[in-house]
Image (cartoon, rainbow, N blue to C red; front, side):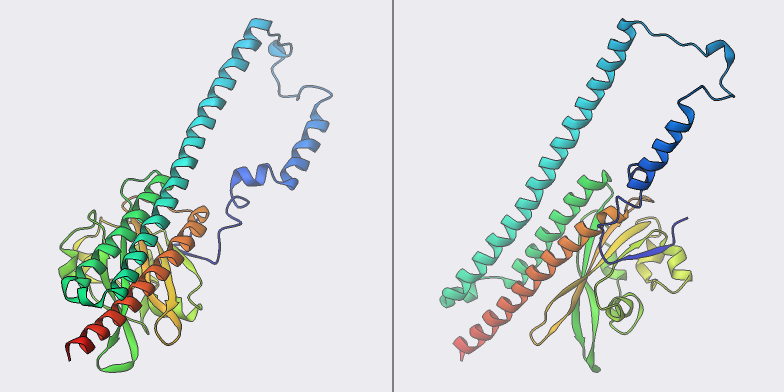
Length: 302
């Protein structure tokens, strides 16, 4: 039975931990071979005597082979198309991030256009772009159309200069819009942020049962969970690690959520890590450029 929260450092052992992986592993092959050798000399004692001799004509064999071949081709076709589609989506993700970064560099080279650009709106559109790509990618690999994405980003706490809190900056449209009114900041020294930081910001968490995680103090319940109890049943949580201006730190947290149970598996861990690293890098870049442009704009107005 799965735990309510499962931590993972990477997903390379995902296949080996499945039933199929066990069967086709070296140990599984050896066991199958030994079983075949011990039973090949005669039929098992429990085999019914009236069907001890079974014969098939050539036509039956050809029909079975044809059906199996057809099913294999259909499976291979669907898997190949899915693989190509996923690769295309990954390229589009990288392509759009590159275009955004190129656009920001152009802003740095044209200081006279600073006042014409709504950077806050651009920043929001940038987060929307990132979350949209992550959402569509996870929907494709999980075959779950209820997948949604949210991002919390760090900001300083006024009364605690040595501490930060993580605030929801963007969520995809499938999550209730009223969450904007019920969401609460989470300090870095409490709840999920504290756990991730204590683990070196390297673990990816799969929440299989949020309610059980709350009971075990593994998740800090907010007003949003109380108001919208059926909106998220399971989720993947990924730390966003990047340069914050002075050092490498956890600049945010990525949430990939689902209304369904048993959506996320160990095989999705490395995908979450990849998306988390790409997201962290893109947000850190956009934030740094925004700060440079903001300072330059103020300087030019003096």
